[in-house]
Length: 302
Image (cartoon, rainbow, N blue to C red; front, side, top):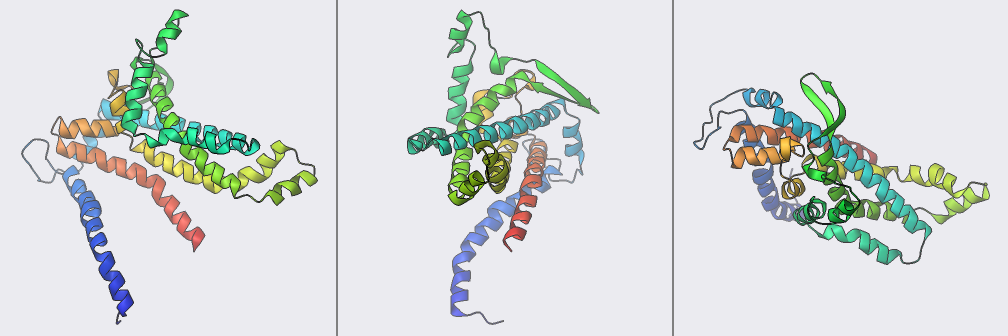
């Protein structure tokens, strides 16, 4: 098939970007996958095939199990909190029209900060000897926050123990503070796009404001909610900078996550194959959320 001049020009403009993506995205993913099944666990490269040895080691490793457990609880608490707070604030702004622009800017301000800055600030705020904790100590309250090594009640599946660490709640608070503004902006945009005539029609039929939101508005915001869930899950499953800046792996790994474990394993322990295996597992976890959503979205727009 002969290309037209416009098609040829478009291909030439796209070629550099496609080449860079092929090398620095898919090429490096392939390289990481190969390293993960090699014996390269020292400073000297050893690319001999090791099979699934590195993966089997990780799933039997207590620290990796703790990281997966913390990631699950962090993801669930983070997503639920961001959705509930973002939606509640959006509905509040929708009900009170005055000062919306000011409040939106206030809620969106944390998003202008990096997770590293957020982690450092909240580390200071929640430290037992600084921040508002001194005020609480006046009343006899001794909060430990991210230094608490206690595990709340949970359950055990095989050799993996699932229990909510108290310290992970401190990290969730910091992450929710930063990302609630994004959820708020999404829901405000969704509420703005709903025709006011739908609300008026529901009022004429005798529906209360609560019924209007529950029966009319919230179902129409379902696509927004799904988008927020996917984006927040993507952030939480590969979280690294916030936790590393705020707590590191924590005492007894109570705030450890695969991202922190991967960094320390690869660049401090020089276990490159193990670190690559952690990276591939994180890629799979993110793909489990992202790929079905992308497929559903393509079908919905086709």
